[in-house]
Image (cartoon, rainbow, N blue to C red):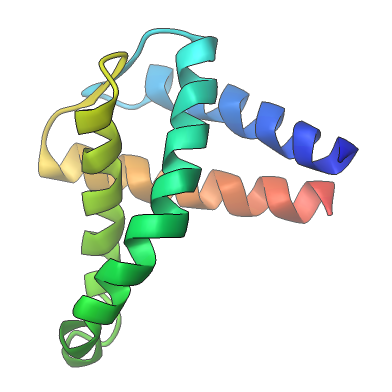
Length: 112
């Protein structure tokens, strides 16, 4: 339980840092970042598997690059669901999605 809390807190802080560093990304505060981490986790657990199944043929044809588009869709859904988080532009959303995936992977490797 302690590792899960540490992962959550680190992910929220680093997500807030990403929002401050990257252009066209607005996040109102650390509490909004914590809420974003929760929303993204729920979307990744519920919507992302459905999108992967639906987009499987396109994913195969693009040699996996369509998974980046699925990540962009998940971030834009979080943007739609939250008023305290906004990302404008496809490229900014893609960069934020890639950076967030990288940060989450690093947090998982460090904490585990």
